Every structure is written in structure tokens, then in C-alpha cells.
Image (cartoon, rainbow, N blue to C red; front, side):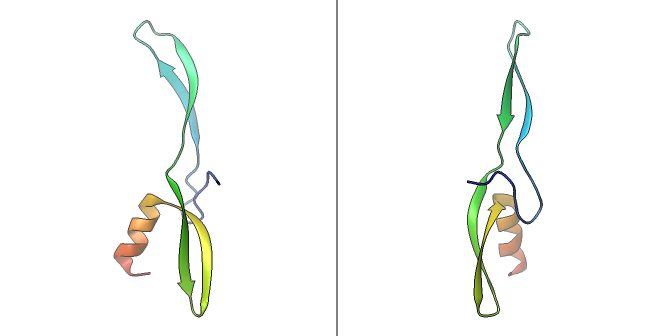
Length: 62
């Protein structure tokens, strides 16, 4: 599955897990990307969208 939102461009970011003893290990934070279908005219388009964008589309009635 893609790791980028087709609407807002949100993507995976990298950083560190930091333990109590201050040891650092690399990790990634992944966005919650879902396959999303939207109807434009008589066509149905499949997109990869983060859940924030899906909520916004539902609120705006798209």
C-alpha cells in the first residue's frame, strides 16, 4: 500500500525511539492511508487518502 496521501501529501516520517536510559533506535511513523473511491461525474476514481482527508471529504459532502 502507498505511504502518501493523494490529497494532502502526508507521508511517512522518521525519528527515534528514546528509552529511559537515552538509547536511541530509528523508527518511522506511518500515516493511516486507506483506499478511497470518489465519484467524479460518471467515473469512479480510486485514490489513496489519509483518514483525516476522508473525514474532511465526508464533512464537505464530496
